[in-house]
Length: 265
Image 1 (tube, rainbow, N blue to C red):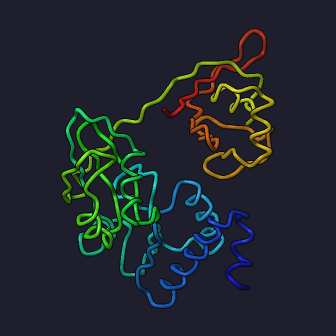
Image 2: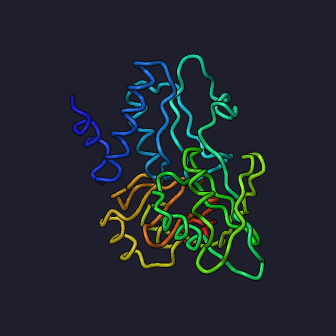
């Protein structure tokens, strides 16, 4: 079976199909040559689809790695038989590094400012992992191969000049995630109900977004409005953001279910 026929089973998204072809190439590289196979960075949706494919191929030894625990963007590292998952952090094996961009606290810079500055140098998004913005510095995870180029060409975010240096991954500053906590009651734990509550839209608008393929449950597209959402599940809506169903409580006297939803801001 050709690669394109294989990946068609997992997604209709042309961009994700290209990612899955890359995953297959790296998997075959490791199996045939017994050497590490490392993809470019995957976002959470791409990773979730890749996990489905990997499972169907016998779940070979692999690690999703973004430079620190809880990274949203990760590379997929297929392990040859002489490596263990913990070996990936060894300096000679680790495919990632980190650039710290420091600037005056008087300048309020955003993730968008840094991403725009990086892409403006000609580096593709797939080469860059998480961009971790703090009050006076921003840590940028990247593939080692682009670090010299970043150091030479990335000097500003917007009009703000940056002081760029390389830091060890174990010194990365990970800002605390910011949430809006929503305490609500819902008629049921259907996906359309949770989207409606978590993103402050009507059930009709929620159902419309689901039908349009803009809603993801645990990072996989879900087109079923009646899919049940469980405590701990992540729900994201393209163009609206991401939320987690943190807690499912007791029923009210009117038979509605108490929920606590944490929406990323």
